[in-house]
Image 1 (spheres, helix red, strand yellow):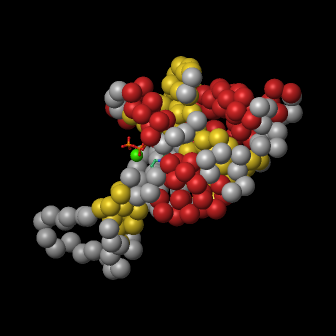
Image 2 (cartoon, rainbow, N blue to C red):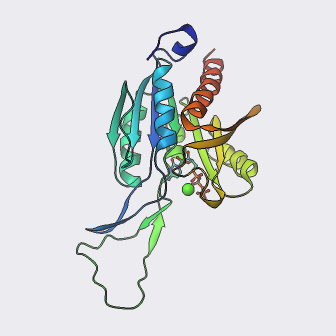
Image 3 (cartoon, rainbow, N blue to C red):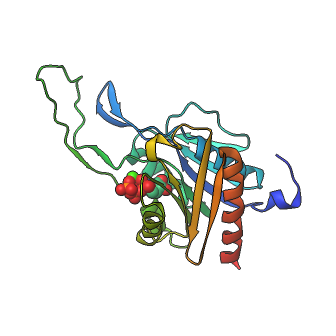
Length: 224
Ligand code: CTP
Ligand code: CA
């Protein structure tokens, strides 16, 4: 949106971003989802585009408009998001996973609307595939940034996710008591192999700009 030298830090870089919630179908009229509004991911996409990047946003259903200069694909389930992301990753230089992906999905989708009969209903679920870990496994040279939403032990879980998923950076935020979800502000602990920074609570767009400055700096350092 503006072309000053510092804002063109990601000029020509292909940035792939996942954002928003997923929807896991139970039957033809119902699904399981989560509280993600997509705001943080969309703010990150907007920030990356402002820095001159070519941005592809793989998004769940959200009530947000596509930021200017960003290309968007809307996906439904965790499996759909995985497929779209894998296809787009081939062209990407930088991958940022902000999506709140379902960890479990119903083992079977009823092909007809489930009728209310019994007093209790049991839903069997199976693990979904981790999009972030899969992308890093398939494209080890792709610079990869994850998010972590935690209600407790923020830094411990952030560091363990960084290592377990073998990613380059992680941005951790506290979601204790519904904090962050669907809120205009957020705060992040940004962690990488040999450093970390705290970004204090601020507007999500400002926070995304600050995060993207850190990401761009680490990305550039890696490319040298
Ligand atoms: N993620 C993903 N695909 C999944 C689950 C998570 O790409 N199936 C990504 C998220 O987009 C985020 C990161 O992994 O960037 C961490 O997500 P989070 O839910 O915090 O961690 P999990 O590994 O799912 O562990 P848990 O929910 O048990 O804390
Ligand atoms: Ca999870």
